[in-house]
Length: 377
Image (tube, rainbow, N blue to C red; front, side, top):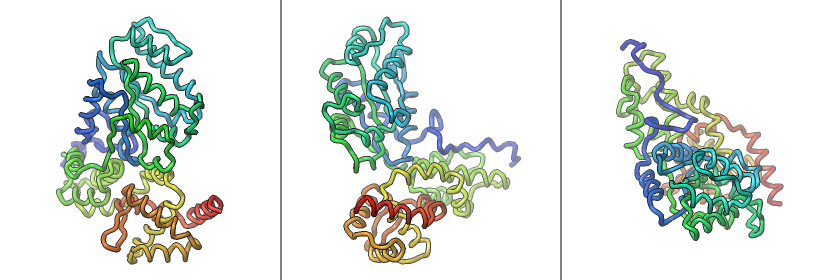
């Protein structure tokens, strides 16, 4: 095959997938469509680990369901973390006014009055997408009278929308590991909402994604190898596929083999390490120490059971109380970072384990341990 016939790399890592680049989530998109069309619920809550595709899912929903009947506006709350509820409410109003410029509706200091005017003057639904909602949950004070707390404000607005039949719907996306610091108001919002959890891709979805490389195809066993190394995580899958495709293209290969996939793992981990760090930085300190220790035990082909893990911790980081180790282990298992078969502990995703081995050094873990001891004692 002439190299000039091979198109640019079809894989995307680190950017939201949109249009034909978006794969899977059909059942979840159907739930969003039903939520928008029906009036039974006013809020929708999307949960998923970091890099599970929440932003891509929101952006795809925005693209797919925007119409003359639906005004869909996206807000990234990571950028609003230092803003008060008053400031964010003002921005929401400004965006709605901007996109309904044919309607005579003006800014109102009282957001509820603005919504009441919106009901009387706008003949389509307004859907507000709030990405990174967990950053607001972590900052929520659980104070019923905190007028500057965005989470309290949103809870009040959801109730107002429901009671007054306002044609506004709210969709939230939150990292699932925010629950350890969840505010009671975030829990109330979640309980009021339709909920969906974004899980890793099924094998069929990964295969479909990899088939976009038709001119430089993945062999069937190469697809299986991608699945084994990434466990269907959308970001890891795209990152590894991108790196392997780039290598195969530059070497004028006719197809992509399992050997290429395995040989490019370290390179992909290094190339897309900043994206993996997003997952790492969101973990609790004890969880980081446990994952680092387990990753290096496995790297040395040692037996990886709970006793070996505790011995490693004692030898390398002084003593960590068994209570904290056990709590962390259960939390990581529940969150899908590790699993246990019989007595053996494994990483759920080899891509993430290899990143820890290559990018995290013992000094960083010792500093984390020192910080952890200060917080405990």
